[in-house]
Image 1: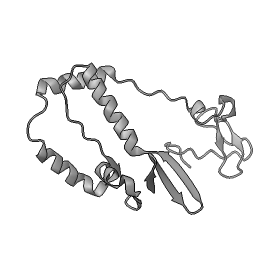
Image 2 (image 1 turned 60 degrees about the horizontal axis):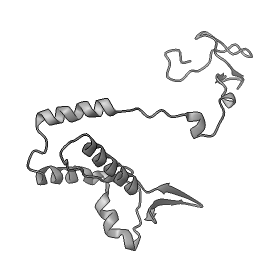
Image 3 (image 1 turned 30 degrees about the horizontal axis):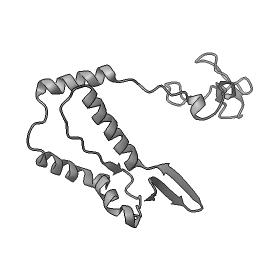
Image 4 (image 1 turned 30 degrees about the vertical axis):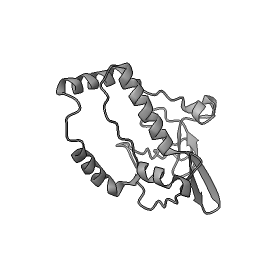
Length: 168
């Protein structure tokens, strides 16, 4: 993996995947949070933004021009505890009083809007292409479950339903 031109590029064998730059995404979220805090008349709260890589096998190749910028915004998960300890010791004075923290928590709760995803649009499929049912483990026949006691119409075997107490 490497960063180049504000994107993350992953080369695997004969394929190449290009992703939005996670550092840029974090910086955008940082700016949005600062703007939201100003709109809600909150004091200038220090916000620390960092991208943490959770895959220990991930190899990051740095592009020369972006080296310092990437190193300041990217770290491996094994280093996060050290980073957090250093951060908490460097910020010695209390930024918010308890009442302000409670007020901020209430504001977050009031202004939170859950993201509603249209899974059909996201994957560019129509609702009519989705078939509801199960495939028989024995004969591979596809059928719809009408009740928890349904059996395969072809071989009369009960279906294997993952994550249920009725798993055969």
